[in-house]
Length: 111
Length: 114
Image (cartoon, rainbow over all chains, first blue to last red; front, side):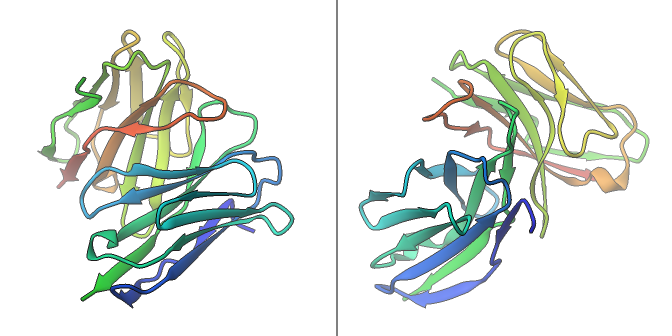
């Protein structure tokens, strides 16, 4: 299994749809996980952190399944402004500074 | 607060030329990072500095050098640029390890090596 793996997409969905992305990771010792959002030609920005089984913030829900070693991001009631690339981020075990970024899942929300 | 500031935003080099990418943060963060992002490859760590005075190699350090000048500044140097170093470079910082940490990124440098 790769250290961090995401479906690259693109996911093309209509406004108002619910869409979910999965991310699998190989390091079973990882404790915290992150979803970053990256707009085209911009820097990544933190969307959500996931420490226990899950986390919800408005229309966004992140869930963690330690047994199967994956995290998911669910977006409800998609908006045009949700169009971006979503990066799954996992700490590399043992090193304070080292985060592993997935290659990202591209989402395009259409009117 | 400006956050993380990196310069320049764009740069074109010829093969063999050298340059330094500058990065500064005003959040008093301990850790600073340099990433490169290539199409289809995602973000890859070049070097990082867990604290002032220390630097460590990341996944793709070959062809690069770094300097943690002080707590605020972390520069990336290309001594002899190669076309394979054409990429978008991001500097980032965060307060340190543990839960709740967040990476703050600079706005990026688009580098083309001809």
